[in-house]
Length: 272
Image (cartoon, rainbow, N blue to C red; front, side, top):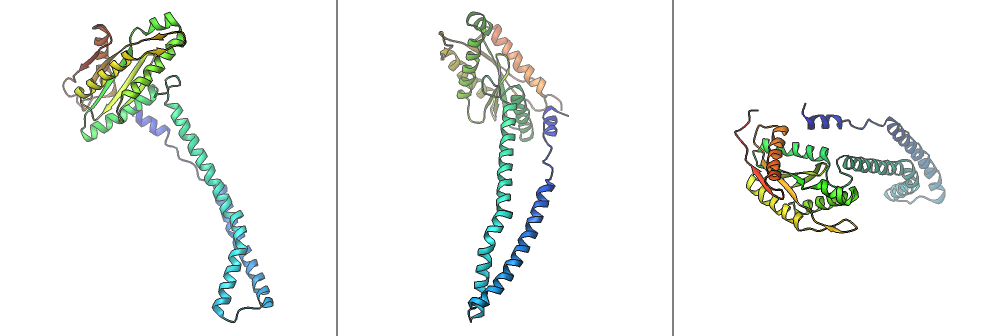
């Protein structure tokens, strides 16, 4: 079972039927029927005393109007009000579940996806590219000489640098692209429906915007750079093979002097 299959299996449990709500609804229906019967008896007893209209249709309409008016409050309190409260509770529960899911895939420092979130997104993108035979590229980025920032300015300054770079990367992406913090000072970017050439151009723009930005760490303004390794998904390969090729391209960008974008073409097609 693949990683995303395990995830969906883990999260696939549905809500169990609420038998207490069903019993309450049944009791409410019987209560309304009983109240309607009693109200109708009262109406039939009172109307002759006050004088029924001579027209049978008018008498029926008057009876129905009185019955509706007298039943409005019981119906609201016994049926509509509990249903509204149940709806609001479900809305709150669904919102809480969505919030918890979002927290589970969000990096608390940078506010972008964490390793789990970006990995699941990449697996989904790979499945789409495989199924529809569309291009997919990724970039693995790493902040250059990040240890020097921590050693010189402290870990709090390092956190601010990471958060600012994450923001810069996010703003440089197109609408369908995704970025996540893959670990430490490393970022993973997904470019759906994008060839290697296109992804390299976008990555170069990201690299340039990081280089040009000044990061306020409280005591000073610092600058940082990022190296990126770009590659394109090839049909039939798995997650490890794709990431390994992106890592190799990133390693070359580092060894060639940092603050660079290196693109590595896929080799021969991998057997499924």
